[in-house]
Structure formats: C-alpha cells, structure tokens
Image 1: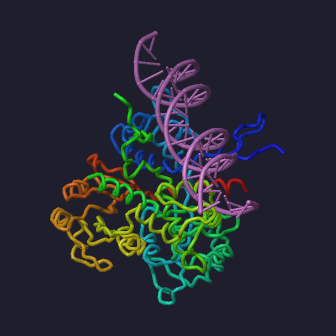
Image 2: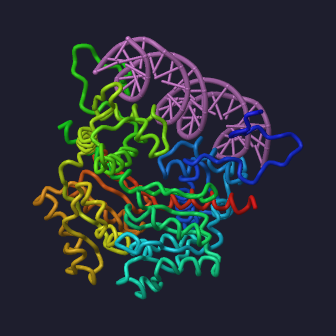
Image 3: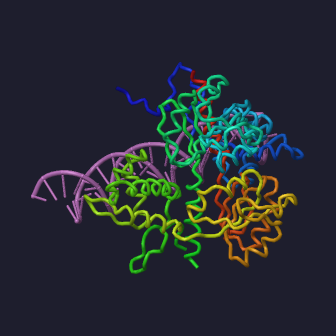
Length: 229
Length: 229
DNA sequence: TAGATTGTTAATCGATTAACAATC
DNA sequence: TAGATTGTTAATCGATTAACAATC
C-alpha cells in the first residue's frame, strides 16, 4: 500500500485541490499581513505594495512574505509588486473572512463575556448569535446584545439556525460534560479556550487558543532576564 | 571573532547558565503538562507518573515529553518514572509560577475587562493590581475589584509599586501613543493582545497573543472542510 | 533598455520522532 | 534477575532563509 499521507506531489493530469496543505505558521501570519495592508491602502500611493515594504514594517524576511502570499493564490508583477486591494481580497477570500459566519458562545463566565464584547470577531466575519451556559443565574440575561440560553437549547438552535461554530469558554472541569451538547447540535468547529483537549468525533475541527502557553513563554523569559541581573 | 550565537556547547569547567535556551514550543507545552499533573496527583496512586502516562492523556509522543521535561531540570527514575509532586514543583519553578508577580492592565475595554476577571492569571501567579485607560468615563471605576486610573498615573505607580509587567489590551490604533507611558513606568515585559507589534527598547520583552492568528487557522480549516463537500 | 521585484528551487536551520544503551 | 522506563544521541521532518533566473 503506497503511503499517501501528506503527499504533496501533484498527480499529472489531475487538477490540484483547492487548498494544497498550507503550513499552519503561514496561516497564522496572514492576519498580520491583512492588518498592514489595510493600513497601507489608507495611505497616499498605497495602491501598490512590495514584499520589501511588508517585510520592513513587520520585521520579517522578504522570502517569507513571498512564500506566504503565494499560498493565497495571488500573482504579483515583477518590478511593480502586488495590487494592495487585490491582495487584501485574496487573503480574506483564502481565510473565508469575506463572508460572515454565525457562532455560539458556550460558557459566559468572565472570559466568554469578554469575548462576546470583543469587536475583533465581528470584524473578521465571526458573528456570535447567542450564549449558552449551565448557570441558572445567567440564563435569560443579555450580554452585549445577545441572549443567554440553557445549554440544552443548543440542540434546537444549532440545526435550526445552521450554526456550525462554537467558541468554548467554560471552566476546564466542565469540558467533558459540555462537549456532547456541541456535537449533538451539529457543531463542526470548536474554538477552544479551555486549555483542555476535548474528545470529539474525528470530523470536528478543534482550534486551541491557550492563554497559559503564552503566559508561560512570557514568564520564563522574565525569569531568565531577572536571574541574569 | 567566534560565533557564540546560540552556542549550546557547554564550556568545560564553567557551570552552565540557568536557562540553556529552551525552545519556545517546549515552554508553551509546559502548562499542559502542569494541568495534567495536577489532575493526576488528585487521583488514587497518583504519586508517581511516567512519560507513557502523560503522552497517552495528551496525545503526544513519549520522546517529546521526556525531552521537554528534561529542560526543567527534573530527573526521573528508570522503571519508576517521576515523582508527580516534584515534577509539578519543577515546572512551576521553571516558569516562575511559584511566586506571584504584579501587573498592570493597560486598556480596559471589552477584552481588558474580560482578562481582568479571568481567574487563570491569578492561578498562575499573575496578579493584576490596577487598570489604566485614556477614556474619562472609565477612570475611577472599579473592575473586578481593581481601580482604573488615567494612563499618566502609571509613571507614578510603576516605580512606586515595582510593577514590571503590563498586559496591553488597547485598540490597535492607540498602541503607538500608549507605549511611551509603559516604558517610562519601568515596564520590562508586555503581554500584547493588540495584534500590532509595538516599538519598544531592546531590553523590553514582548509576548504577542494574537487571537486573529488562531481564528485564521480555524477559518481556513473550516473553508477547506466545507469546500471538500 | 536597465533594474527592481517576483516566483521558485536549493541550502540551512531547528524541532520532532525514533532508537537504544544505561539503569533501577 | 527481568523488564520497564529514563536520558540521550541519531534520523527524520518541515519551516525558514538564501539565491537566482525569469520577467515586466
């Protein structure tokens, strides 16, 4: 049996798939480029942009910028560079940020509440339409204009509203008991802020955002700096 | 001139430095291990733990666990494994999470407010003692028990309270005007949630936590999954 | 045209995984 | 002792950086 895992070799005569296995680090950098390009477009003579330009502003190499941008499918012009508006459109399209998608907030404690008020989500097409919690006291309240429902109701709303994304911000200990509600509601992607890896069916996408990992990096560098004194 | 950059070769006769250049991915994983170990210690017969044990729970390889743990300086015993409590202590010590450190929250909008109410910081020794903002309406209010001051006051409080850490959660556009206040206040480490790379003196540590990078990864995988249907 | 910039291949770098001798 | 697990070195893998021909 041939090992086809991660095969990057294009098969002759067969059109290549839409997304040819873009490295995660590249995808993570795209929003940075996007933010720069939006600032750049607002300036005088910002219609065109070169890799040198982007690299200087973001403190990266031109090689990396060129390689990253190539994944979005955009084509530049030698000597000239890229058309800024076109490049913005290409990145947004690649990320799906040109359409808005609805999502549920699961767990409306301190972090969940904060995230619901964070404009960065809506700016990027992620539209939180409702909150869910197990806490009786929170049910029926409004958070930044969205109502909070008992978690069981997700199984009604999910299929009804065709919502496939959940932002998970419950306490770590509650993760195992909450996950079944998500999977039974038709959720296909979970943005997980709990720090616990949830057990989900293989077709459900989980993206972990772990604040403690970042804090660990900050802490250890600080330790190092102080101990060097 | 010999190239000493990133030299890992220990010099004979000279005691090695405290922190021998631990890879960032390793540091980011340590909090995961810590969380597992704390759960593990609470169980029956959780006094000892092996790499196999940790790897199974977290879905990683034993090689990686062993390598990561070695960086913290802990020594295990063949056949037996590690002493759980000792391993917890070693990781906390490595990260500096065994002492608490004070920090300022700069920018108390939606995200800043949320982060101030997030118990995960205090659990890991990061103690937010005050908030700062430019918005007149917010000054003087209390957020989760901490008062909000005008940003200029940071230059008084920083040196007075010996606070060296700032959590930065102002709008991206406000970053350039806010940074001078931090550096003039004796801030040495910035946990940056703005998505903009701030210009700081070389001795100031900046750790970027960019939610949009994570969202980008989630979005692109979702795009891919939907387009495959 | 001449020169700057792209697109892409090759070289380098660093992290992960595999393997295995040492050890309790 | 026999066998499981550590500590560590070697092999693999993948991302970043460098280099350069193609191009407008």
